[in-house]
Image (cartoon, rainbow, N blue to C red; front, top):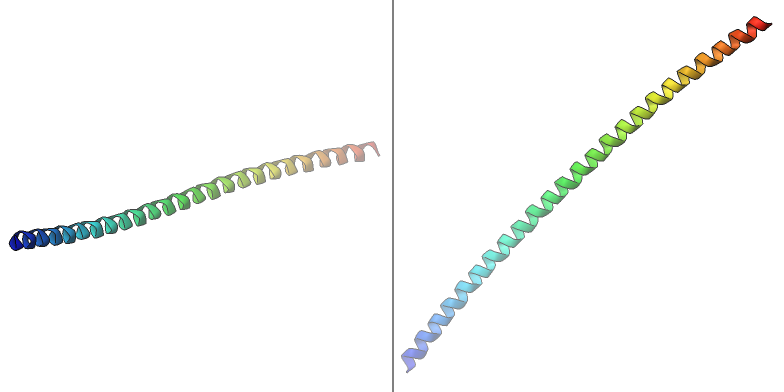
Length: 89
């Protein structure tokens, strides 16, 4: 009977140690997976910010071009009006 208990005790210890190793491996894998996912999220956020900056730059450039165009037209109109005023006097 003592031998049976000894065999059961040894088997249970071996099983417990084996399960602990599997749990440690699972924890390491989970940590690696979380780190990988965090890196992916950071890359995605960086990409989104770069896209937003590019879009904002394009909008500002377009607005600046429109303002320059409008300023040129206003200058032309003012010059034409000045010529008409000079012609009348």
